[in-house]
Amino acid sequence: MLDPKLFRQDMNKLIEKLRQRGHELDMDNFLKLENRRKVLQEQTETLQARRNSVSREIGIAKSQGRDPKELLDSVATLGDELKSRMSDLVDIQSSLHDLLSEIPNLAHDSVPVGRDEQDNVEIRRWGTPGAADFEWKDHVELGEGLGMMDYELASKLAGSRFVVLKGALARLHRALAQFMLDTHVGEHGYSEANVPLLVNETTLYGTGQLPKFEEDQFKTSGDSSYYLIPTAEVPLTNTVADRIVEDSELPMHWVAHTACFRREAGSYGRDTRGMIRQHQFEKVELVHIVRPHESYETLEAMTGHAETILRKLGLPYRVIALCTGDMGFAAAKTYDIEVWLPSQNLYREISSCSNTEGFQARRMKARWRNPETGKPEPLHTLNGSGVAVGRALIGVMENHQNPDGSITVPEALRPYMGGMTRIAA
RNA sequence: GGAGAGUUGGCAGAGUGGUCGAAUGCGCCGGUUUCGAAAACCGGUGACUGUAACAGGUCCGAGGGUUCGAAUCCCUCACUCUCCGCCA
Image 1: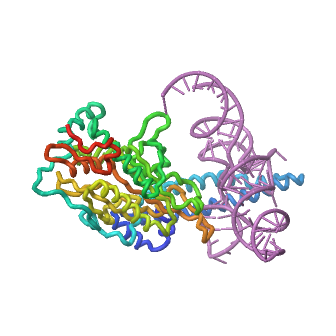
Image 2 (image 1 turned 30 degrees about the vertical axis):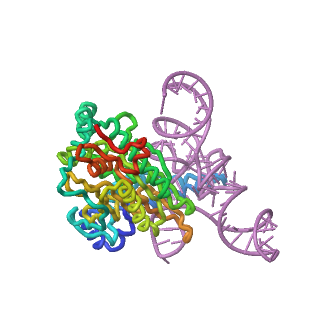
Image 3 (image 1 turned 90 degrees about the vertical axis):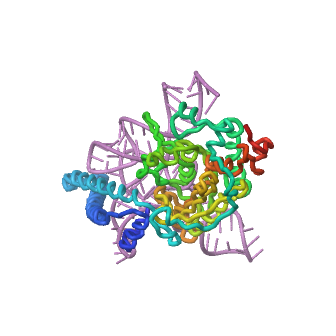
């Protein structure tokens, strides 16, 4: 949710900033609703004020033993009138709310303006991609060659976009998650959390997945319906929903390892091979809840934490700043980290780190008490993958593969693998 | 799954349908006192909306209803706690 004050300031600038993000604001419709809302609200509140004062007088009259008949007559029709104004008002307010909840966040001034991923800007690179003359196998070929990655079995059990990992590869996957969690808790100062994988509608609204991205979510059926989380960002960020947080509790740094579930409704035919894009995958997620003035500093730090994981794993990567047109709905600024995949000869997203500023906080009603003013203000929230476990597995398999199809276990993971140095068939 | 008890401000906890946005205590902020602190005493202290500032409006788990008037009465739902059953 944008700050409502923006709508009362420079409308043209707002429209322009939203256009950069690919959102056309229907200003005429908005103003029509907003003006009507003002009139109705004024009328409703005037009626309420009259009702309140007459009711009070009736109470006083009765307590003094006077006959309230005259007063009762004077408000005889007031109730009906109020009811009809009120219902008009509620309708208008809900239309306005619908309109506002589908408007994306504004981009920070430092974000490159552009239409799509072509316009993203590379910030830095780390590591050296492997030799160009080597016959790099992709992770599917490697995994199936080892007999430890089974797509056929997964499709029998569940359908497309699932995988079954076996043996040392399953363990490597688990080792990656453990290693990431331990690094963030032990070296980067995060608090570990274990959170619900099923959440309610309000929670998904808070972080911005609803109402606009309903089709991307899995939803349970039954009397009470839940949504499967598309990322741990959802439960972690919502831990401060509907609260006024004291300054002494800030900043909060959360890390959680969870399964994530996505319908991938809009991606038929894309990344159908392998583990790149699945309905279920695991991710170690970083979430920061901070004072507004420290959020951009935190974005840089969090991105660095995710990078540390890739460095320790010896995976070449690059960091890019997403342009205005390529950012997610709630983000004000996003860095993507892309890992080198030798089989495809390109960099592929493995982490996405965003500052949403007060956008999610306003939806969640998450505030902090600013000690300087004593007043509650929206918090800033950030989230980033630190990192996607399935894609990290792909990165490790492909970058650390040997000519015989075996995989060298990176130093950092060996303690989690019982000392194993090499995965072979 | 069955039976019962709850849900009120940062926390604890009152609240006969009528000047109740809500007593009181704690906490917090300011002051008096003190060399300083503690204690004591005095004063202040919810959120949202709205206004130039007042005024006004909304909020006592959520949503409906009754009434001129609802924290208080009625209905539905959610959650918490206790006991029984079941279960990892």
